[in-house]
Length: 363
Image (cartoon, rainbow, N blue to C red; front, side):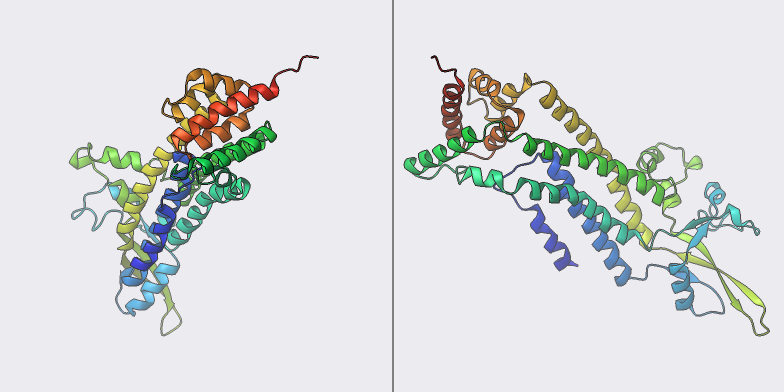
């Protein structure tokens, strides 16, 4: 397991050139690694220990264990509110008196590791799309100017090449920024859809799962019903049918212990809180991007803040007025990837050059 989890650490390595936001990386990188880690842990747990152990008389235990694992087990929802030890043997385990409709079946546990894996793939999808669309443009434009340890002649040459590119391709980068914003919006859509699908996966119990766990601690002892046990029961029932010696169908009622649900309940309580926090961050990010798109007046201030106020607000306003949103975004990305002193000199020179280029020529 250590080797499997160790291989995921490469996705968390520090990147020299960053073209995305922290929230974008939290969704694409951290959440993907988190879900893959959970999938690996749950898969390994299934093979290290017995994921289900059933008690039945007169039949081989391994047969019942296999049958109940690949089919389903069930509980009685009304039995969760009864007193354990006097009214019921375990939470949710009671006599159904032949009422099949009163049973709550659990069929998810053999699919959890696969679902987590596909969730991780969908979380990585925006990053995969952005890597294709970005095409290494930011890394090409930086040209090693993020360190600032080169000779002055080399820095001047690279600044000149970068400036020529930006002046030549001015107002041609709008598709670049809109594709990136689309990838960020896809992150929010992905989280919302995954929350909805997980709620369907757990029969409508997931959306309120974390909130009920928080309320559980404040509930009086006599009124408590552990929501983790309700969603991820540790003891369930399973019915196995077989033919008897005379051909009569015999019913065997077994009690099944699901130790794997101890891992599942902790895994999904963490996922619930993380997805809720991440969805709020993504909503805030979408509002922030909307302000950048529809309120151009905020762009100069953001450009100044990205350089730790090394640039004057007048310089930021002058360059912002002469370029489109796509060009501004390129400069914004470069500000977080280039050496601050090199970037300040570069942007002041670019402002003068763009101003002289765009100035009207008197006849």
